[in-house]
Amino acid sequence: MKVLFVCLGNICRSPTAEGVFRKYLAASPLADKVSVDSAGTADWHTGKAPDPRTCAAALKRGYDLSMLQARQATADDFHNFDLILAMDKSNLANLEALRPANSRAELDLLLQRYALPRSEVPDPYYGGEQGFEDVLDLLENASQALLAELQERV
Image (cartoon, rainbow, N blue to C red; front, side, top):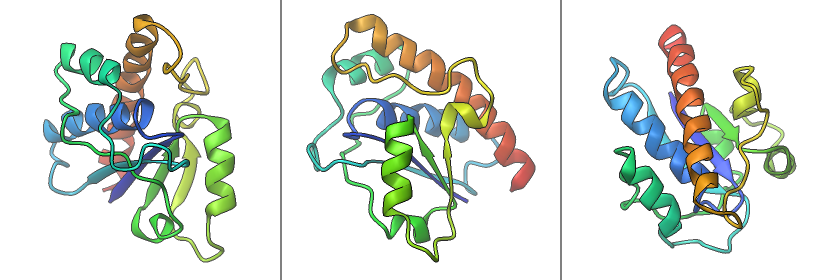
């Protein structure tokens, strides 16, 4: 099973989702059965590390994002991944427009998939430190739900 998390620039939300889920996955029986990646629908930050504020907030909770590099989502991702999870409705729409007709991937909105209190992961880029903490809270809850789903499926 291959999972892809997607936001706009792949420097805040989706790399955080990748890092959080990787840690949950590593502590589970699915560690060798599921792979994870992240991407952005825009190409502004391709090849760059996650935002330093994202890395700092994640590291405080034990998630190391230092090895990640931003990349843009491609049509090939719909053939290479089983599950593509968007952080918000705008990126979901961008992915739907990119999706090839013969795609095999499931495409969904991450938080909405698990009926969490919010339907979208807000972009913390233009806010303060609390925005990055809020994103981590949301993604930890979503990661628990995703792991439970995959344990049933795999």
